[in-house]
Image (cartoon, rainbow, N blue to C red; front, side):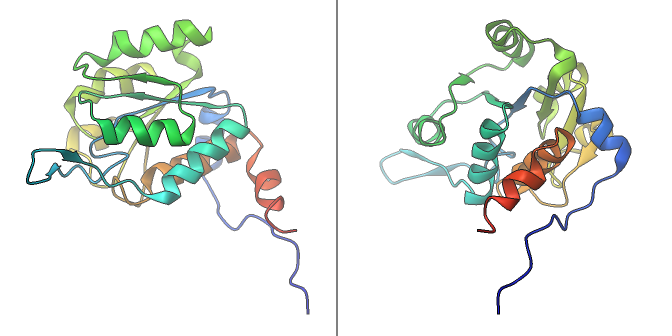
Length: 186
């Protein structure tokens, strides 16, 4: 017996959806947002990163919906660059502690304004960027000052699907969530 058509089961606050409606780019920190924030090193000193597949799929869905994911991070590593390449993320700034100029250069490349940007961060270096966006988000395990600044806090921790929840919210706010979901029901 066939199952009924897929319909969205997630519900978001209407005010949040309105606030995020015009988002065209989302800036993401890496350590503590796209990863669990742990620093892992092999015996040879090679940096290792753990990424969550839910986050990766959400970022691909954003791109399908015309929302550009961008990375602005204080670190740089070969594993990060490989993961971004796999996800088709073209806009990234590495090794920058002052994230506002890095984000502004991406906005300029895209011809967008802060009023069209969302961001997710987890610690103090992310605060200036979060405060400029129209929609600031944080993973559940972010620093208290970031949690206080965020418009929305994921129920998940960094590296454990927090970015996917943000992607789903942005997709819903921009009217793409239901159509993308329906494409998986065939």
